[in-house]
Length: 59
Image (cartoon, rainbow, N blue to C red; front, side, top):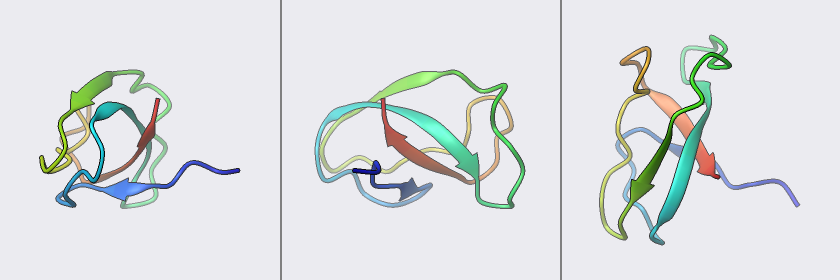
């Protein structure tokens, strides 16, 4: 089963560790291996390395 993606700015439904899957603008985020901890109700941030909107998946 594929991981559900969450977009920058969306609220986190479940606490956990997440990583960037890809950038919203279509660029690859493969250099961005950063994993972040997000708490339930927090908003997903921009990509740490590119500072661009990103799609996040559970790590």
